[in-house]
View 1 (cartoon, rainbow, N blue to C red):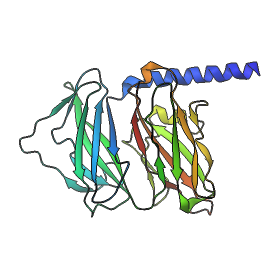
View 2: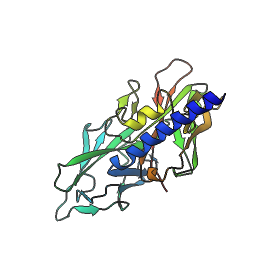
View 3: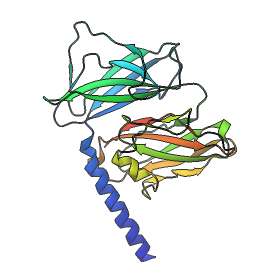
Length: 262
C-alpha cells in the first residue's frame, strides 16, 4: 500500500510540473458569457492577456463569425472604419458585446480574433459560441482556482444511461468531429488534453468517465486544482462527450472556459 501511495504521489508531482510548465504558454484566454447563447440574446466575449509582453489585439476585436468549425463558412464580418488596435497587458481584459441575431441558430459558431506579440506574425484565435437548442448542458457556479475543487454538472435528459467522457484543453483552435452531427471544440494536440484523456490525472481530474443517471444527469465531475501558485492564469476549456445508451450517434455538451484564479 505504501508503494502504491508513493507511485501516486510521484504521478501527481509529474502532472503538476507539466501543468506549471504550460502556465506561461497561452498568451490569450477567452470566455463567452453566457456559456450557451439564446438567439436574440446579447453575448459578451472577454479576452484576458496572459503574456509578459503586451499583446496587440485587432481594433475590430472580432473579425468574423464563422459557423460549424474554426475557419468554417463566414456568416458575418465586421468593418473597422477609424478604429485602432488595442494593447492588452498581462492580466488585463477586453470585453466585446454583440446582440446575437435570431437567424444565427446553428448549434456552434466561432469568433475569429486576431492578435500579435511585438513585431511577430498575426495570430488567429478561434473562440466557440454554443447556441441553445436542446443539446446536453454542462454547467458550474464556480471558477477554477488554485488549491480549490470546482464541481460541474451535466444535464442531458434525452441521454439517460449514456456513457460520458470529460476532457480539457488549453486551446479551441482545432476541434474534432465526434459524429456527423456533433463537433468537439477541444484541441487534442494541446498538452492539457493528454493530462485529462484517455487517463485523467488522478486526484486532479475526477469523475471524468462515468454513466449518466436515469434523469440523464451527473454531478460527479470535478477538477481539484493543486496548490501550485504558478497555475494561476492558465487558460482551461472543459467539455463533455456522451455516447447514448441506445447506440445513437455521440453528442457533446457546450464547453466552459476559465482563467485559473490565484
